[in-house]
Amino acid sequence: MSTINETPDQEPKMETEQPFMAHLIELRDRVLRIVVVVIAIFLVLFFFANDLYHLVSEPLLSKLPDGSTMIATGVAAPFLTPFKLSLVASIFLAIPYIFYQFWSFVAPGLYNHEKRLALPLIASSVVLFYSGIAFSFYIVFPLMFAFFTATTPEGVAMMTDISQYLDFILKMFFAFGVAFEVPVFTIVLTITGVTNADKLAEKRPYVIVGSFVIGMLLTPPDIVSQTLLAIPVWLLFELGIIFSRIIGNRKTRKDKENNVDNHEPSADNKPSADNEPVTENNESAAENEPRYKPMTDDEMEAELDAIEREEER
Image (cartoon, rainbow, N blue to C red; front, side, top):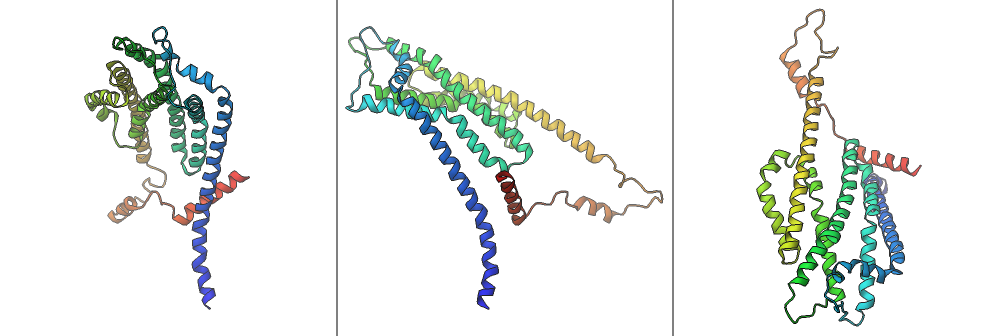
């Protein structure tokens, strides 16, 4: 009898653990795919590691005085530095695929309206991240290195170590790539209801000051690079406010349309021929009747299992 009583208690545990394990297996598979793609890109870039390093060091080499070159102070630096650059560049180039795998993993658990919002946000995040890297490489680096070489003290030969230069530019790439995501952050805050465009506009003075503080913390201690980071962050914040207003106006217009549709009398709610009076109890019952019944945990798991079976087909 004890074994008969134990089996019903164990079956619900197996039903709750199986979908969780299935999600972990899927997550593992997608991470492995990302690793394989990054390694494949790395194997291609590694053969051109020295050329790649020469490309990223061109903004500094072009500003060095005549006779000055970059140096390698570490024994293995001539090999490890281009190796590190190739690996980081592989990850940067694989970002669209990484975001695609992330999207494929979370998309089955999203509603249709969430999918319509998430996909443009993910695509714009990738574009803005690459735009930040391109902005720092083609605009910020030439101006910044020209400022550094012009302020070199008399009698000092500027010869930068290749490892320190790589760490410096990677930090700058990441700083500008993340800073250019400001419109996405503002739109997400508006969509989730944390704030709105009017409240964001009221915080404009604080954002401008904060942009220069971020520029001071993430860039070298020179006014050129700080300004070149602070101004784009502020302009992108203004762009985020514009898109937030557009989204807010659409949401308000849609809510008004829904309210109009809900207040229109339907055939069932029209007064009958007998002119039957509506009692207060009927009105309160109609108001208190729930319009949406949330799904239970078992129903949600059954729905997710059905979606997984459809994808496997």
